[in-house]
Length: 149
Image (cartoon, rainbow, N blue to C red; front, side, top):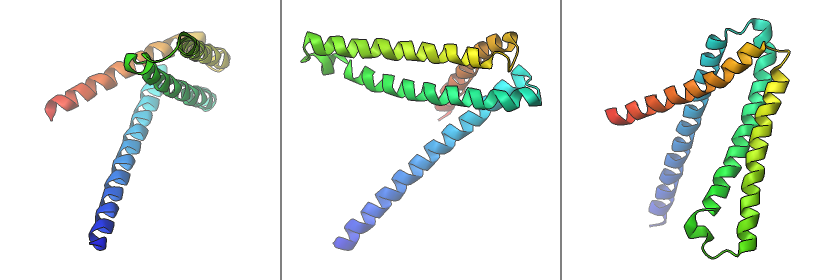
C-alpha cells in the first residue's frame, strides 16, 4: 500500500514538473519569437541591438512583475472577495490599484527615456506599435491552435 502511494506521488510530481517545464518552454519560445519579430521589424543595427536589448529586457521584467502584482490585486478586487470589506479596506485596495497603474505607466516612460540616444525616436514609436502587433498575432495563433484541437 505504501509503495502505491509513493508511486502515485512520484507520478503526480513528475507530471507536474513536466507541465511546468512545458510552460517554461512555451514562455521562452514566445520571448524568442518576440525578440526576432521586434529585431526584424525595427531593423536594428548590431550596435543598436547591443544597447537596445538590455534596456528592453529590464523594462519587460519590470512590466511582468507589475502586471503580476496587478493580477493578484484584481483577484482581491473581485466582487465575491470584496463584499465583506470595509470602506477603508476597499479604498486601500483601490489606491494600490492606482499606484500600480502609475508604476506601469512610469515604467513605459522610463523605457522611452532610456531608449532615446540608443535608437532613433521613429524606432521608439514603431516599437510601441510592434508590441501591439506581436500580441495580436500571438493571440490569433493561440485561437487558431485551439480551434484545430
